[in-house]
Length: 239
Image: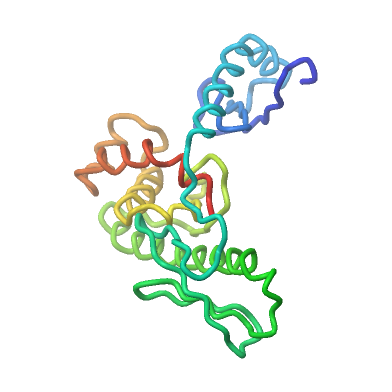
């Protein structure tokens, strides 16, 4: 791989019928069936080298133009992205030993009085992310309960992950994995991704049959999908 101007990963997939390359900011992945050797895949990537470099450059330029949703500092008065909106952050002193996050019409960070001032911003950010991951799990479970019964699309398990290029996946044993950053998107977009992965329990590809199944759950799924395509790069920048 050293003769290439980029590194890449190989991911074996039972769904793949031939090798393909996916490109995300700073990440190149080759998705391939189990039967293709790594030597063959390397030749395939070499043949596609110019296309990959151009795609990486386009993505890098696009990322540089994207404005982050996150505030520069997590201090009193900062605006926190959450479910397609922005909410004010209030920082309040507390006698608790750890930072505690509450949410109603705003975020409240209860920060221990003994914590040095210089540690507030990063510590609040870390606690907010933990809070949002828990909330993302709860909302995923809600949407699964709402939709799973319709076509018997019950996952074996649900997990929330930190991912740089994927919104969700459905494993071969029907384990659903969702990107926690979806909690920053509007609820109907979050719901669309959950439904998308649930439908892969029955249809493992993106054929017309698959999209008909998605539409049976969400007739307006195209609008939700379009929002994610247009705004997803901002969400992927995270908090």
